[in-house]
Amino acid sequence: MIDNQERKAEYYKALVEKKSEYEGVFYVGVTSTGVFCRPTCPARKPKYTNCEFYETAQQALLASFRPCQRCRPLSHPNQVSDIVRFLVEAVEQNPEKRWKGHDFRALSIDESTARRQFKKRFGMTFVEYARSRRMGLALKSIRSGEKIINTQLASGYDSSSGFRDAFSRIMGAPPTRLDDSRILKAAWLDTMLGPMVAIADESELYLLEFVDRRGLESEVARLRKRMKAAIIPGQTVAIQSIERELTQYFEGTLTEWKTPLHPIGSPFQQSVWDQLRQIPPGETRSYADIALALGKPTAYRAVAQANGANQLAIVIPCHRVINSSGALGGYGGGSARKEWFLNHEKRGVSNK
Ligand SMILES: [Zn+2]
Image: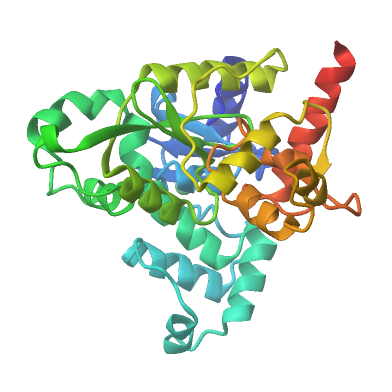
């Protein structure tokens, strides 16, 4: 979500005046209706206080807005593909569906055509689109965070709410009795590279990931199982601490991560993550370097796996591990983010 007041004022003006030069520059989520629009939407314009602005359609989806039926923000202004329109509508009819190859065949749609057309229009595949929408709905509860926490603990989840149901499916069922179950809290953190989710108890951080990270749902399920924990929306000291440090990190003023971490993994994974934390900002290592530092020079594949299993993005800097060839290598949060972190950290070091 765009936070800058001047920028928001500028975008709101563009929205009211339906300025076409802002097409693709921003999307507006309307909190009173739950839809998101392109700047030139012909519908009546929302109040400023009901507007949230996003740079990409995906961010608006992840923030739980659904695409407007009038301006169809997921279609190119002058050219709407029937397949794209059809699939966007199919997702709205059943936003929690996980799409598989046979679903496309049942609709007589070629999966690779759908993938290509979505990618071309919105920079994400259809499956990524459907997933963003599903996650957005599921994460709606943690966006509102503290507002609902008190009533939630008193009454359990409101089972009539589809949003709560979706949240429970990802974060787990709410505790029936508070005394026999550990409680972790989940919070939504907006960053300049997109929204993140933090899961923590009062004193330690267990998970920090970009909301659009593939596999986030199964990471959360593993965490719940390992900790025998229930996860509910809320704030803790550890979450406030990591939020503060993330802001400093993105501003380039952070000197050291101090939020206590609780990484969940095997002893070998823990040893890899310890090594990662010793890579100074502005520097990179290869998987082979890490394996060597652990005294297990042939274990670089296991190192790569442990690296990928890291659930504390940025703080445990798995983004500082690149291929031996010097190529950037993969990253769970997307290689564009990896590149951004490395450049950002390099700049930080040269400024000191
Ligand atoms: Zn609209």
